[in-house]
Length: 212
Image (cartoon, rainbow, N blue to C red; front, side, top):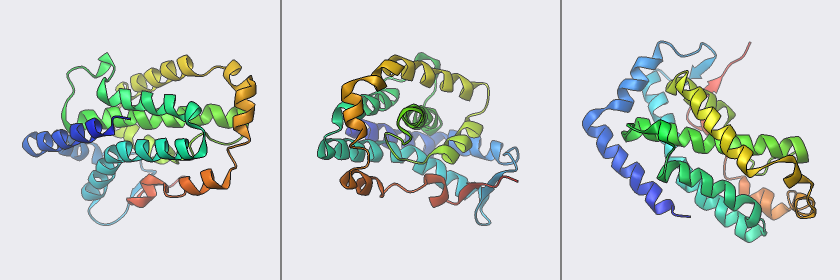
């Protein structure tokens, strides 16, 4: 994993943000229009949302490093590494629909692609194995990011994720002997404990959905 390059991109994007404030303006412009189910803790809604977005972006390289380490130690690298490499690729060589985007607001798009990739892969594993490949709960965080990015562009990013996952996984992949052997490893205590360091990202930063 080349997460050092991802961290350098994020650092450079912070420098651009300090000069141009694109992400700050995006957040301010979206505050009034946030869906009423999105609850922001504290009196400083803009600050809460800004901290959440920064964490959403900055968690990607940390998570990729941790996931790669878990995969090696637990002997499941063959299944997890392709997912991680594709998430990394979304940052380092983003799809053409992100041409012309730069700064932290662009990295929000790329982080959304990476997080949604894991979510989509997990959905496929849950459908076949009744549990995720990578137990990282980003559902609420992705819904909030989707609204910040805005439609229809966020929907285009979703389509890019679906297309990428379709190229990685099909029903035959889950029916192989190797996949069934891997299934037995999902409940390995070592694997379960390793993932416990990744609580719900949105809740950590005071962003939640309140559904009636």
